[in-house]
Length: 220
Image (tube, rainbow, N blue to C red; front, side, top):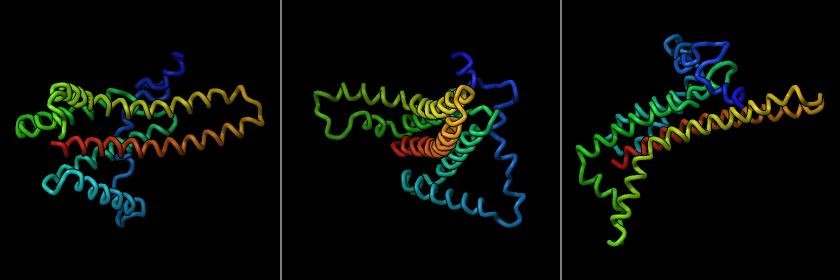
């Protein structure tokens, strides 16, 4: 079991600077080297434009500048998730040191801004509309706890989803030498399907993290 979970350590024996995978996509594919936009750049610009429209709809017209930060957050998580699919590269988004570093400062800044500038609005959010008078004190406790665990749920959701898929790929890969020749082809097909699923999970989890952060900000 120790050898199995050692794949999620922040370093491996092959590459000692696995945390560099966070900025590798930015270093390897800078857009300034393209004289004419490639199809990948055009596709990425289209994705960013659609994300900007969606985040602006969630935040409102008065907070359009925040969409840039949320798009940057989406891009960072997406890049780290995809870099973790390559061999011998540590998946930084599967470590709480990385995910909590993104979620906790965002949540603290939202709370500080809300409680200092819109105190009455923040207090009204603790009691949902239509709550009976007898349950108001109980609902305040529930809403307070739900607000406090938001950064933890954001970080653990991303970490758990990235660990689960990589752990399944590792378990199936370790059973390869013990299988018959006829079963290896089935194992390879299964691994390819799981890799495609992991690529989809990498996109979905980065989108979910950015959208939930946007929704938390829109409440303020």
